[in-house]
Amino acid sequence: MMPPPPLRLHLLFRSETLIPLLRQRPSCDAPHCRTRRYISVRASAAQLAAADVSTAQQPALELGLEAAAAGFVTGKRKATEVAHAFWRNIVQKGDTVVDATCGNGNDTLALLKMVADETGRGRVYGMDIQDSAIENTSSFLKMAVDDEHQRGLVKLFPICHSRMEEIVPKDAPVRLVAFNLGYLPGGDKTVITVPRTTELALRAASRILSSGGLISVLVYIGHPGGRDELDVVESFSSSLPVDTWVTCKLQMLNRPVSPVLVLLNKK
Image (cartoon, rainbow, N blue to C red; front, side):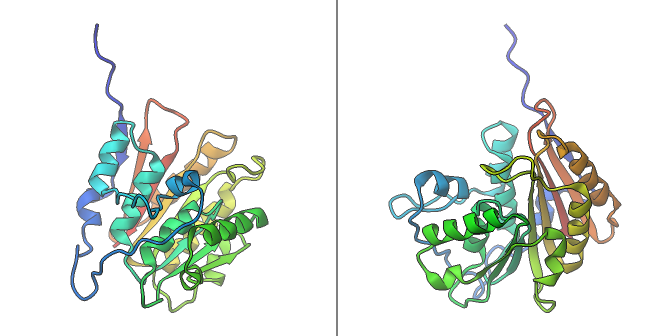
């Protein structure tokens, strides 16, 4: 009996390979490199596991980029875990980042862990067009983060992601803009992100992103309108100039409704 065929991973690259690209950031240069501090939490185990958060009893394992990619290829890691691994490879303590689709706050919390340090310079600007998403994110952060000062590093806005330039200070270089497209988990599935405003948001993100920064777009295509949105994301990514951008896509070929991760790195 023949063994089942291996899980196939589809990668599209423009001008450079991805792993060397994301190793541009120095690994640890004092005094900028500091020991990571885990955020103390009080949320449920299920929520914390979804957000990749540590607990007092069991610190979370920082999933390396290579391990995340290998896990994705073998079907053992979710696309969200791969996205977070790429974020950790780009984002530094004290950075400004944008969560363009807050949802229930899992990505927002993950980003807060990456930028928070004792200097208080890091910022997470989060937005969502649904008031319920902003409320869910705020409540989740209150449960998950004991330190009120750290929670204050997150600024939440109930607006469309296409308007991110209105809330991010013009003098704040943005290291990462993260999108998680589709509908709010546990919410009204008829309320979804749409191609028109997503394209506007991508253009806004490309303008505010600093050199060396990353736009991360996780596209869920298993619902009506999802593939249309993916077409827009791919079209925008393909149109970016090769001399200033590197774009790629991670997609399962034999799982047609699995989420697609699109990464856009600004040189």
